[in-house]
Length: 404
Image 1 (tube, helix red, strand yellow):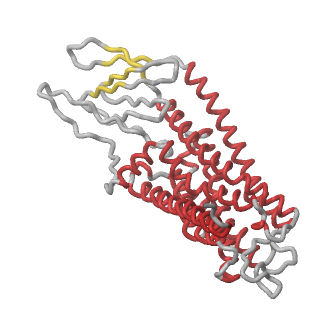
Image 2 (image 1 turned 180 degrees about the vertical axis):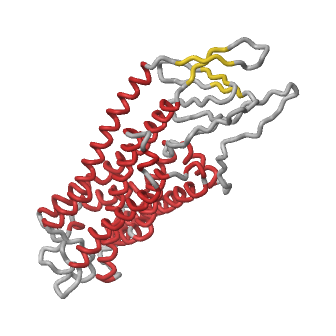
Image 3 (image 1 turned 90 degrees about the vertical axis):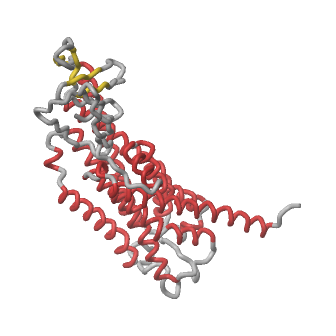
């Protein structure tokens, strides 16, 4: 039996409603998990992750304050909440999207400084400067969203959209004119996008040059003794500069993936947004492609937490502990077990946070216990075994470090 047209439409709305509800739930729960992971894990508390938390808060607010009403507008032909709330909802949408873009721009600048000026990074990227950057991001986002829409600068006739006797009843329209579209898209998407691409290209160029220098560096050999009765052993010592460079490169790859996914999700929307704005289309939401590219952009907010877990081992571990209702512990040490001969067992090998790339290796001078740590560096050029009396830190290309 064939379904009637009304039944097919109802079934499609139910399927669409379930899909949008799952997307909203994934967005909210995933970004709450990111915030909790950074708060609960000491190893995730660093200045770079302040930008990650800001991005997660932006996506969380989008899931709470924008996506439910976008779904309502998608599933219903009429807007039941009035013109004032409609303009507030559209302003929030524009503000949060702008905040995401500018936060990603701040992340790219942070990575650029970390890779190009590693020795000065700690003195340049200070907590108060990160706070000022975040304040600027949100101030600009509010200025380019609420101010133009509430003042009517985005409409063709210069009046506030969705208000007045000429506004259509039961509609929630985002009106566009050429000056607003050009200004908004250039300042809040295209120019930041060009800046981010240039920044990561420069980082890639520097990373390739550093990788060549690291590969051509002659290994430095030292002689150490595991005990007085054993013969000397030659070991390869990895410099702290090399270790820091490898950490920064991995962190850059992680965050560059976040930027790449963001561009892939939002670029189609902004292309269509620009085209419709230049044509001064009276109601972009009626264009068949507009809801598709809009929800493709919204999907980015649900993908970011998955990206952190897929590309970052510390986030993955924090997610696991939180989902098991256990507080994550990253002290990085396992209790030393003394054997009958008086020697110590192997220390627990911990991971360096990929996004927190500036963790100092502190070695305890005068330590009498002797540690045995073996690590292979699978970079295609060498395999390294480390034995030390006091402390040797080795970092592989995946960002895994053995602490003294």
